[in-house]
Amino acid sequence: MPGLEAQIQEIAGLLTKARTAFALTGAGISTESGIPDFRSPGKGLWVSTQLMDVLTSEVLQNEPERFYKAAMPLLAEFAAAEPNPAHRALAELERLGHIYGIITQNIDGLHQRAGSQRVWEVHGHLRTGSCVCCGRKQPFARLQKSYEEGEIPPRCPACGHMLRPDVVMFNEPLARDFFDVHDLLYGGCDLMLVVGSSLTVYPAAGLVTLARDLVIINLQPTPYDEQARVVIREKAGEVLPKIVAAVRDMSP
Image (cartoon, rainbow, N blue to C red; front, side, top):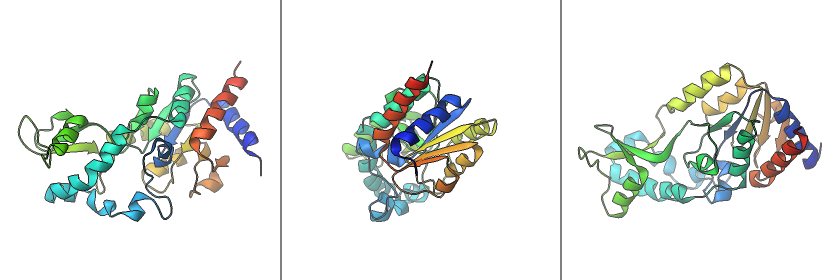
């Protein structure tokens, strides 16, 4: 098995040769920003809590106070996080022209805050919330402030109906970004760089099958490891900056 340095050089070579490369990121890229992981064995949020049963459209509609009391502390933690070296490295790979953009399963918005320009957020985001009645958008900070002031659930200032975060909940269809990027990948993807994803959440995980070559950087094994050209089980924040440096060394 090649050592880490050889693997980094191989990934850098694949990135410099690819005509169209994308990154696909999951919760693991944001753990180094202090955001809890979801599916790590024995400690992921879905394993250690009942959030999977609460963060649904049914609970939001029928038990909004229960939904917000479970969801808002976690969502506020996401919104307060800062990008880490892995986010910044992917933004730099995009700036250098070695990845076309980032497909993310995350809702934290850290890719954009790190400087990434093309980001497809297949599970929504925390920049805004929407009224369930009139559809008007409000900054997520307004939902958070209303919650902290005891207005549970937060209410639309225009019509008085409930506001909801603009994130995809369990039992809901994926965001429009998923379908847009699926069509884009179907048109051609030489390389998919997977970072911090268990690749067990579908249909988002299935996007990797649209890439000719696959690279996986994730602490835990994934169902697609055997199909990948390179698999690295190290922290993304340590590996990705080294990949950026290697790509720069290879550039003319």
